Image 1 (tube, helix red, strand yellow):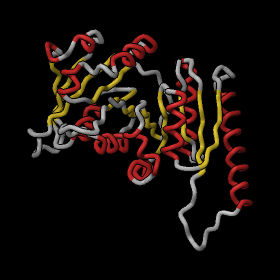
Image 2 (tube, helix red, strand yellow):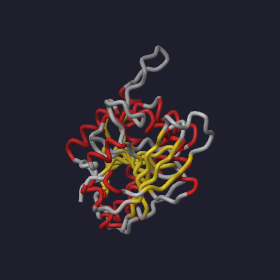
Image 3 (cartoon, one colour):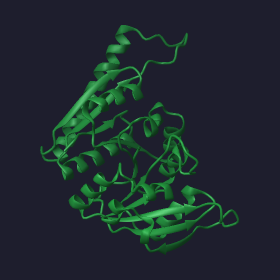
Length: 277
């Protein structure tokens, strides 16, 4: 099983993401890599990065990383190999380099409340949602790990027509490991500008699915909503799920692109896994 990577900035939400990742690593028998990147401060006449100050930052970060490692080692009863890495430079670049080396199962990020909005819109780490060619899992601060028994796939007709070839192997693995069931949700925005609430309907899979997806026996749902993320969130109010999967696109006309994925991750009450082509 491949590794799980968790960028750590020592906030409460990052700590929760690390614990979530440790529990997931234990469940799938994966290694866990905690990485902290010391980023150069913005140039300012009031802030001078001396060698002493830099060494203080390094020592403090190493101590905090080791504290996390020991805590998670106890949490997993020593059954997970936990590695720590301290780097200096650009967070997205360093995480991307680590992922190119490890080819991880997933990169797990944590955020909460107003900080999640900042995290997804202004933080350098937000670029990981659409620049990494690896699954990126955003975990709300108040959410602990639960086995992925019910997974919601928020996708568009184009994805259904293609059979989601880049995702089917992962979906099959999740079904085998967790007994996962899948709900496919597509959102129609053109017919619902006047609606304040989503309209949810269940449809037969029929011939709309390619063979690889049919083998997963998903339930299909069509939602009418003025906004993509509102429709998915409305569905989640009435239906239980342990994980939402989204498929952001760098190109194309479908509304559910990267910015929509960010908005859903910001408001979702459950973890959101972003998968790229």
